[in-house]
Amino acid sequence: MVILKKISVSVFLLMCTFSVFATETEEASQVVSDFQSTLLSVMQQGNSDFDARFEQLKPVVLKTHDLAKMTRIVISKEWRGLAKEQKQQLINHIARLSIASYAHYFKSYSGEKFKIESVKQLSPAQIYVHSFLVLPNDNDVSMDYLLKKKKDGWRIINIITNGVSDLALKRSEYGAVLKKSGFEVLLAEISAKIEKFSQ
Amino acid sequence: MKSHFLIRCVGLSTSLLLAGCSYFQGGSVEDPHENFNRSMHAFNDGMDNYVSQPLVTCYQWITPEFMEMGVANFFTNLKEPRTVINDALQGKEKAAGEDFERFVLNTVLGFGGLINVASYADIDYHEEDFAQTLAVWGVPRGEYLVLPMLGPASYRSLPGELVDAASSPVSYVSWPIQLLGLLNARNNADESLARINEIAVDPYLFMRSAYWQWRDHKIFEGQVNPESMLLLDMDDDDEELEDEEMEVGL
Figure 1 (cartoon, rainbow over the protein chains, first blue to last red):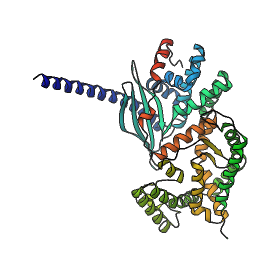
Figure 2: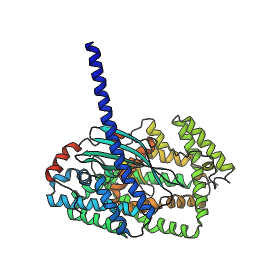
Figure 3: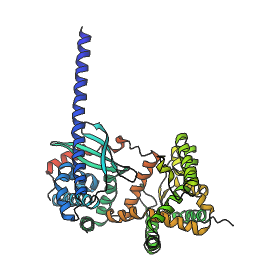
Figure 4: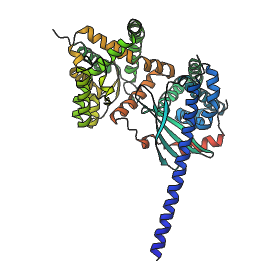
């Protein structure tokens, strides 16, 4: 009888765990889905004004991405050596760069759609969403998202396009530029990229 | 007399590289040949800006879109024998069969590969090379290298480049066709190169990171291992960011 009770308690706890994981993966998947819907909507509107696209994407990117965390990971070891104001400036620049790059690349629509293929909980605080950008006359582009749990919900911290991680690319560059050429040079380089995207 | 222009190019490039590597040492543990690689990257960049890019612009200007597409299809089709051989060497029977079928269909019904008939028959396109085969066989990738004229490579891809050039039908056709093949390859890479220039803060580091990731993606057949994306050092950072109350302030 005692063994039976222990088994039923274990099964109950296991079910609770699965149920928590299921809710969490659904929440994370919803974050990605909301973000992709906004991207599609911006593309479908086909607004030729960069600033308008930027302003439309800004609230969604800020809501769905953890840009402070992304900046911290990108800058890596050099982060601790920066003053608080410098850290804030970098976070703002990288946030602006992220939004500007979305506004630059997702500006017109020709039948594209997003498809979420699978969602996997990697750890209690990290979830991986595997999705595709389906192109009408070309191969699908694999677009995967790594999400991190924050106090107020799940946020995107990395985008992996056809196996190439955005965070890894920036991490390989930005820390090295900061170390070699200094803070002001890195900020100027990022500003130049934002300017280029806006043209 | 048949020309071996491409094989010679690869051979010359490899010789220059080996000679260069012995002169230029210095770099990090992560990239021991960084000094040499950066010089080669700058050289390739200059060649691209002053030679390849203007030639490609002329090519795009004089070639109607349907011809560009036909040329691209033709050279993609010529890569199929290489893919079939490497499918077989990696033990991918199904893919080898599909790729052989693609090659025969496109060559026979697609006027020598000018029309991609196989795409209408929904036969998937795969691309395999000998460096991927070596990876599947367990050969370690070795260090990063930038080859003169050819771009990013690794120790593992050096023999791969030579074997691929030798197994490609393009190596055995006349030089104008080989030149057209080079133009087509540069034309296909045009959008990606422009994008790198738009995004990269340090194009050399960007290319190195993108190259390693892209090669892994191809070796693992596009199957990203989600666990490899898990960021183990993040939890410590949380406290630091939250202590400082850092948020975006746009």
